[in-house]
Image (cartoon, rainbow, N blue to C red; front, side, top):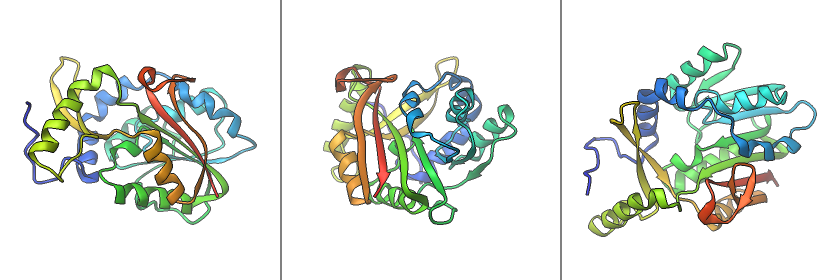
Length: 245
């Protein structure tokens, strides 16, 4: 088994995630230029001129989709990584972004109509931080506001080796990490591993329980491959759409 990176910062921590995404930001920007097909499912919810907060905005991939589809009115991005935001501003100088932690959003109550959480929520390290992030999202949403969330579906063949590693680790160090805590490498153009990113493997039931406990109504909670709803084993993402109750 590969050894986990030696560090004084817990690998499954918000601080560690920020350091990793700062490190890989230039290469990450290059690899995130394609559209997010799942967001086509969001378009019917964008009515009038909504205020949109993109939590975990990264290098502006969701902004690109909204701009191309003429669905931009009032957009604000938030990311824990200042280097990701720096890359976003290179391509989109007009973008408005803030460096912030999704568990402590620096916005007033009832400020936004829509919150995007595209492939960001799964980096949160524990149940407490996930509930904090959802509580903050609920707070800053307007009444009947919408959350559009995607989490990687890690129940795919290509991730099996990471599950096997997680299983062995959970047996050796019980109580530290579970089998659903995966560390997936980020490789540069030459194939060298630059970092190992923490992911939590969510299922529909776990997301639903967190959402309900946080005061949301579930509108969609399904597996997707692009804009198509599919069975778990063929899915790329777990797509969840919530409404502020």
